[in-house]
Length: 138
Image 1 (cartoon, rainbow, N blue to C red):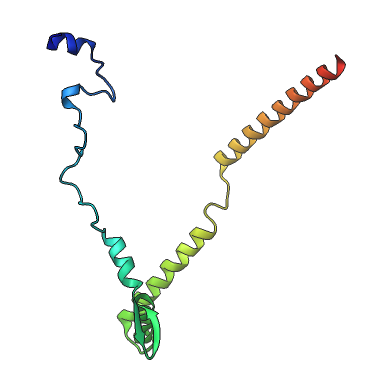
Image 2: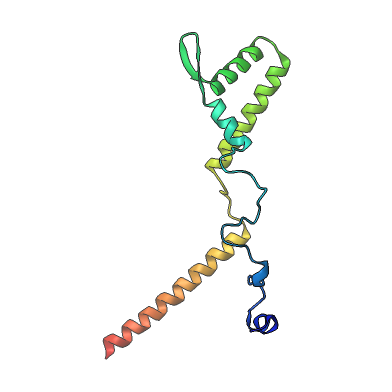
């Protein structure tokens, strides 16, 4: 079979690239991408902040130690530390509120969706009752 005949029989289109353009087995689509085992910044930061340190004979993680030190500086009158502490508290409160009540107030679209679902349930129940009455009558 010639190349032209192969190309005619080969299906090419959306999600079906020509055979010569397809990845070879074991070949990556992004060969210079992030190597396996390399951690991203969020993972590294989380691991470092969870490491334990000993302060005044007590074992606490680094995040607790840093927040404690920040609060101590803010209480002693350091304005920058106070501003940063207030920003952290606000951020934590906003996250707590968003996590507790994701969307407590239904809007018009939600109400229309619920009304449509209830209407479908009612029509389904009426149809089931008709079928049940027909089988009883037989």
